[in-house]
Length: 155
Image 1 (cartoon, helix red, strand yellow):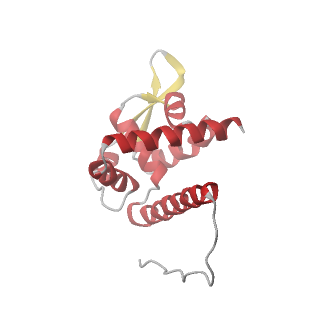
Image 2 (cartoon, rainbow, N blue to C red):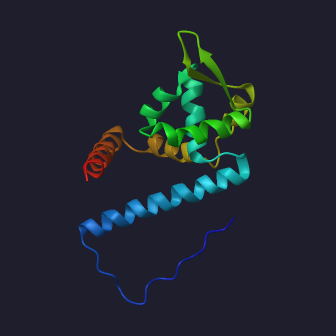
């Protein structure tokens, strides 16, 4: 799948610092969505679904509530993701022996097999970035993004 080359604007567009930062955020969001759609076509799961699988794979017997808190998602948003992964036999739900109202999730062998493929995923791109960038720069970017998330959450 080739990239569509966007022609340059007919005139120079003037952006201030705020607009330049927002432009980068929108480009990031667009690329995340593009890669997620490609992952759906090639792997059968989206970027968010793969993230859920990776987290559950590293944390077996994780509850939906703990997963929602980890991802900062409303539990109802996560329900659809979990149900799709269960239908695909990538996750298994079992009742919590201490509280029958709660479900615990584990990755299946099919889920493990799917996670073995990393090329072309959002995760692979992030791993490449983390390998090549100094830790201090990554930490600084994370602080800035966390602060932006916090400000947006209060808005």
